[in-house]
Length: 166
Image 1 (cartoon, rainbow, N blue to C red):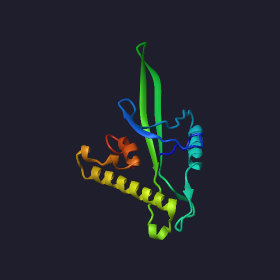
Image 2: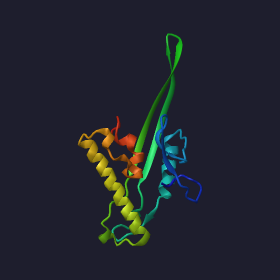
Image 3: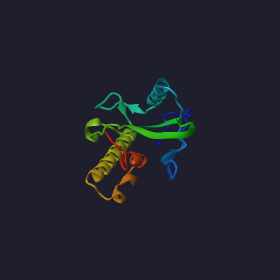
Image 4: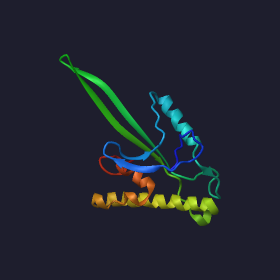
């Protein structure tokens, strides 16, 4: 797991954690508070330019990893009813996923590190497909294979529960 927004050039080992208040999250990721659409777009652009890419025989600018952007939206307001004030909070999470493309290893001519990256990409896409297939087939929620890859583990709340996937 790589933090694309981190100022540090050195990669640290980021761990997936779970607790009752935050749910499933990656400990130590950079969190940015934005107050406008332009600020959000700037954060997304900064992350995108730090993304790992490399040329293969199939694609000049091939993404070498998946990217997950989670946007937490919070609205706070005070509602008055007959002179009394009540605080209200609305919270939502929007998850945007950009999957690196699945590659046929024989056609991409990947070697060494790129071969390992391609295998990892294909494994994660397969794990995601298995989760979606299990959800579509109506399997018991205890049998959904969310833990088969880091990406599906991070996406557990977005794939299951009351989430809407499009």
